[in-house]
Amino acid sequence: MKSVVILVSGRGSNMEAIVKACAAEAWPARIAAVVSNRPSAEGLTFAQEHGIATAVVDHQAFESREAFDAELQRTIDGYAPDLLVLAGFMRILTPGFTAHYAGRMLNIHPSLLPAFTGLHTHRRALEAGCKLAGATVHFVTAELDHGAIVAQAVVPVLPGDDEASLSARILKLEHRMYPSAVRWFVEGQLAIDAGGVVRHTGGESQAFFS
Image 1 (cartoon, rainbow, N blue to C red):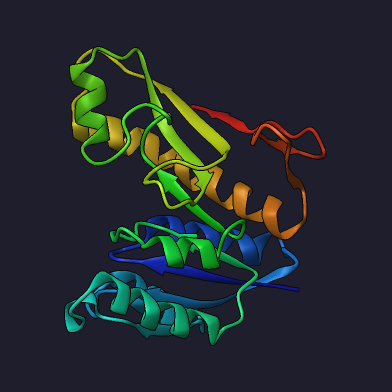
Image 2: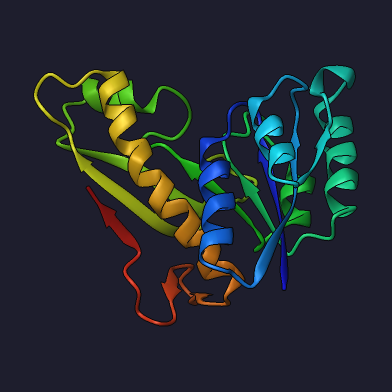
């Protein structure tokens, strides 16, 4: 039975999707805790209502990113996670923190990486005239929004789309893709080849379409 800890900063809709899928599909895993850097994060309430342990490490209480990450790591490790999942966790993590969880930390980014790292991804995709947009699940490394790609979700950019409409359509696919990626990890179905490419060992598609 694998132990999963999820980090959120807000509502954590992807966290909700993962929690529900874990229960509905009887994964060989348990969601051990939901941890946030914001005491007011809505995701904490959802976790508590579902009997999941919660913790808060408020980044505003620390003078440096390193000090915050050290306390965050101590808190997370108290739950002995096999996998750490970032679900709308809005903090840039230090190299020491990412090294500690190397190969066992996933993130979801709202673009088709390696395009549009950073913020305002949907706006930038629209401004660039992209015909397709989407989201990416990837392993976390010290380099922001990089790391081996586990899965990608793709939607067409429609005439009249704005940031809100495009984001909403992509989010629906995120709620399918991210639970699948977490399940693959806990079931031991992911392998990274010598070139750094992630393969599903059972041949399941790693692309999700609307």
